Length: 389
Image 1 (cartoon, one colour):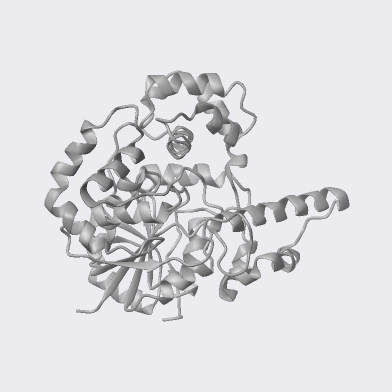
Image 2: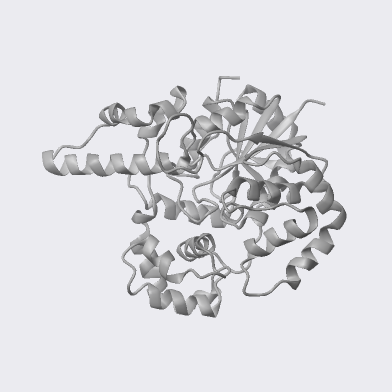
């Protein structure tokens, strides 16, 4: 049987670290990628089609989309939803980056054998602990794993091991190199956070220049200004970095409005009465998205959880929802097309009159409000065909 490796990713944005990960993998490479909204509760800097194109240009064979109700979730639920999609496409392996060198297959075996006991242990822990804290205590108790607070990819890798337990998926951890969490554009691999920071700093400088000269800045001139990041981005996709972009600043007025006028925020997914009250109070004083998060989060409600809650509010995510049965394809290579042929009944490749997934469709419509240059994200869009492989 051919080796088919799954990769779960956001590519927000795609950079040399992601290229390195893809290059370490043999066989067919299927990427389950977040759409236009990210796991930690933020809009993607580039839209899903642009990021899928980046992945295909750098070695991916097939890119499929995670529905928004999978992509904007805490680690365990994000991992379980993504692994389920990849398993449905027939992967034999799952590859991911991690700061740790442990054998995640052993971790998956432990969870397969003792999963019920481990979940019961989580339920027994004090309510004032956040769910991530409870999960880390569970891993420490049953496996002896220690956490130093600076290993976010290791934490996510454990969620992948948990999701893959009992599914006959071989876990392949790729040791991460470089300062992946640094905010500085230093030598070697730069973090996605540092790249986003530089791109928005560049946008601010260009907007200032536009105001001063009363002339718009062309994509060509923007490419010239990308010199600070060109060493951290695969040359094949550098031009795509001039694509339309967005961040929370574009949506904050919409979020303020939604929180102020919605009298029943507790009807939104994972929003309870306590959080509703805190949000109603904080939104009167917060001047931007980050200030709102700072005023609402607590030890129990982490910043990541608050960012996701705010995303649910903006997207009007209901308490109850169903995941789509079909898998939406964003792009494929010649090799990836063979996988699609083997899974024809599971695939949706073009969205017509009916949405692939209602909640993802609405989330994409809201995402488009973040930049007037964004193109239609769903209706009529066909998968990207790559000629590389």
